[in-house]
Amino acid sequence: MNLLTQTSIAVATISAVIVPPAFSQENATEPQSSSLSIGIGFPDTSEPLRARAGIGFGVLPDYEGSSDYNAVAFPLVDVKKQGIFFVNGASINPNNGLASAGMTIFHLTHTNGNSQSTQFLLGPFIRAHQGREQDDNEILKGLGDIDPSVGVGIFMTLNTGPLLFNLTAAPHDVGNDNDGFLVSLDAAYTIAVNNNFELSSNLSTSWADDEYMQSYFGISNAQATNTGLSQFNSTSGFKDVGISFKATYALSKNWIIDGQLGYWHLLDDASNSPIVEKEGSENQVRGLVGLSYQF
Image 1 (cartoon, rainbow, N blue to C red):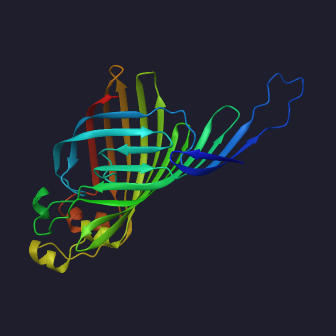
Image 2 (cartoon, one colour):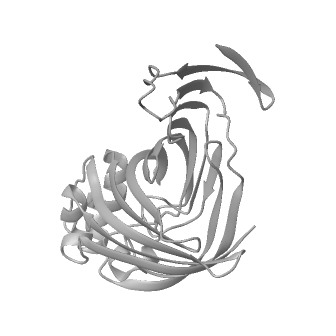
Image 3 (cartoon, helix red, strand yellow):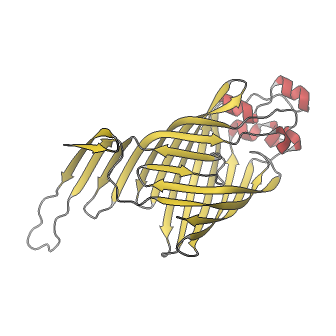
């Protein structure tokens, strides 16, 4: 057991080396060892810092559940040091918000004899939400605005080869002094076609509590009076399920172009809401094309 000092604080890491039984002389393959590292703080890593910034142009629904679409432009940001921290900008996934960031405080890494590793990371997570304005669509007039907010929660990531599983959970200010809660789960698979071209697919789902669901999909008695929509009480449950694809191509050492296309299907009370069932659509398509500079 080793006591390591990482960054400006002391962190304890337990490392173990597992060596399989020796092979017989008839087997020409040398025995390989495996290692397991568990610790509080940042894991040892040789991964470089990666940073990209640019702009994306996309087509998104006016609001979550809308059948009307708008062309939008927004900044693209992707900064990370694998296993240490990450900062992500907006994407086509409606559950990612405007931006998010996380930092590892607990890690578990297993490396087998072929130098392939599986890594579990846990740490604090910050997500910024864009909210919703009643001027975004005619059907929303009279429902009031949901202000932008920032919520602090946790993230958990399991990374094994081309597969990545990510769970995030954070509160969300939904107005009237209420904090809704949103949990999202993603499973991504990434392959490098060649040195310049990368493809990835992502399956995602999300769960939201009563406050979140009522704010975004419910219709109170006062809102029903203001809008003419039927009163609707929306309760906690799974909000959506989606699939998306991303293609990234390096035009040069520094310039990157990528395209994203995704489909999300609203579930349960989200799909039954009057602003979705009668005035919108439970089927949501999102896409963008972006250009960014890699530092």
